[in-house]
Amino acid sequence: MAATALTLGVTGVPAQAAPAPGGPGLGDTYFPDYGNSGYDVGHYDIRLRYTPSTDKLTGTTTILATATQDLSRFNLDFVLDVSSIYVNNRPATFAREGDHELVVTPARTIADGGAMTVVVQYSGVPSTKVAAGFTAWTRTPDGALAIGEPEIAWWWFPSNDHPTDKATFDVSVSVPTGVEAISNGTMPRPPVQETLGYTRWSWRSLKPQATYLTFLTVGQYDITQDTTANGQTVYNAYSQLLSPEWRDGAQASVERTAEITDWESTLFGPWPFEARGGVVMPPGTVSFALETQTRPNFGASFFRRGANTSVVVHENAHQWFGDSVSVADWQHIWLNEGFASYAEWLWSEKNDEGTAQEIFDYLYATYPDDASIWTTAPADPGVAELFGDAVYDRGAMTLHQLRVAVGDDAFFEILRTWTAEHRYGNGTTAEFTALAEKISGQDLAALFQAWLYTPAKPVLASAAGKAKKATPATPKSWAEISQTHALLHEH
Ligand SMILES: [Zn+2]
Image 1 (cartoon, rainbow, N blue to C red):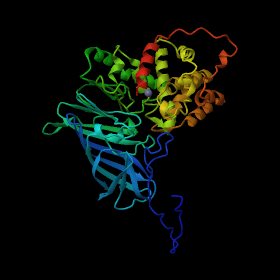
Image 2: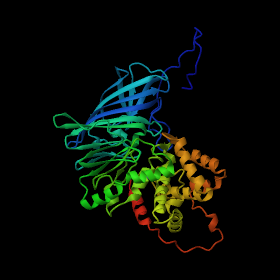
Image 3: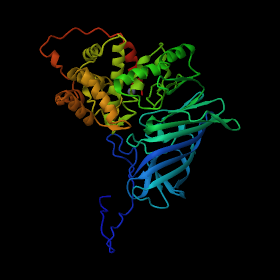
Image 4: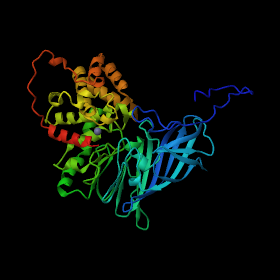
């Protein structure tokens, strides 16, 4: 747009800048073509029908957006087969570019600041659509899972697929009667029998939500319902394919969601959303867990040895660190994973299963000197180590070093100020470190340089000149935390 600077026409009235196409990406450091420029989405209305036996998905997504430039054309990120697109009530033309770009040319250009109502009709078999080298859509023996990070939206709704463009969502899905369809937020109405043999499930997210945190879980689930102390609804769902033993472990963990999130609220600030819950997926399907907004999804094998509250603590800590405050660029992923991992350490400390200091000492002593945790800088892990040890464990170790340096009062004030100042928005590493310095009044440049930006094992000031100590004892919580992290890293 810089090339079309405002000029005065012959009438003396400022001429309109020529409408121009929106960009096919937002310039993310690691995923430059994810998301699109030229518009900002406010709401998605996703209305689908899904048949598990054929994996056939048909639907209409209505996008309410605002143009952020004079717009002649714009992109959506999507891979299913599109039959029609309307923009502001007129048919638009559309074409594919690359493996996930849908280029939409409206009949009329849209003025900067103008409203856009984009209606996309589509169908397809999502498990057969390959983009970025794979399909993120997972078929299960009794349904499907639309759960993935960063890629998942492409396979079930057209979007501006980057965490910097959050929106509210209505997701309604018609599935064969007797099958459950679960998504984020609250249920504005109970499931309704719609046509012969199909029942429509409706879900609503009233707070800004990133596209990758929007999920759809379809299959045979037992749903439990509870109410938190502050009156919020908790919907938990357990795959009926779980063995009784795994089911017991899952319930002994996920049924504690209200208690765990209330405890996290005392550390991180008020719970940011309108509902809570958790979904436990079928065994042998998605193995990781994901912090899908308001209601994380957990791989069944987290509960193969019984209860695992660490993973419930981790995924729900993400509701503050990742979901309410999202990365401004995928490079800053440690702001999600380091913080959610550190929440597990705090849970261990609360339960007398090992203090955060003991876990720190154990990790510092036991990771080999040439491990990726030391050779990768958490603030710039690269795509290959996006979910690596440096992001999770060294991210948590960084926070522990910050806590040791500034003291508990300042440390938790930093966390609560971070979640308040960036609520429903985005954040960067530089913004976090600046806030830590501002609140603590300390110069923390050397600490952050060593722990976040340097691909080498940081030297501990307290250890300088001392003889090498014996390897610290393994904290009691470590078996569960390390098992949790091994599964999270499979992702
Ligand atoms: Zn995580």
